[in-house]
Length: 155
Image (tube, rainbow, N blue to C red):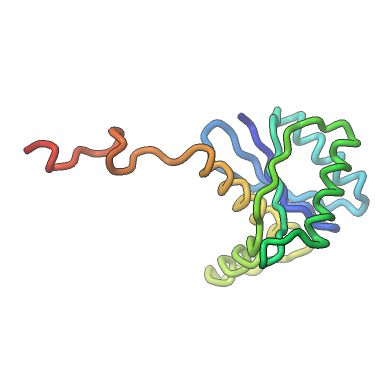
């Protein structure tokens, strides 16, 4: 099932794509100056990639409560619904994803431009991959019958 991952921000909306392979890949962020233009870009991606569901990062407070930023995400989801995007939306805990992306980029000595939306799209990729991993746990681990033979099984 084709899934769109979203890391919502007032100015930049990070985007990621996941399909039946359950691998999230970053897409160019929606960074247009007007909110209506950013939503139009999202609608275009939904049509082009035949998206069937949306996963959006939900910024819980560190104590797990819902604060101002989470309410902004709720308002954005309503904006999508008002624009006619009638897809299921899954809210996923996104605490510290942008920080995690920035730390990864620093550790690789890569520079980034926040204005480009790169950090937001990488955060959307982490959010979506977490969701996909929970939905489609990896196979091939010990004891699942799909992995390599255990030498003890041959005795």
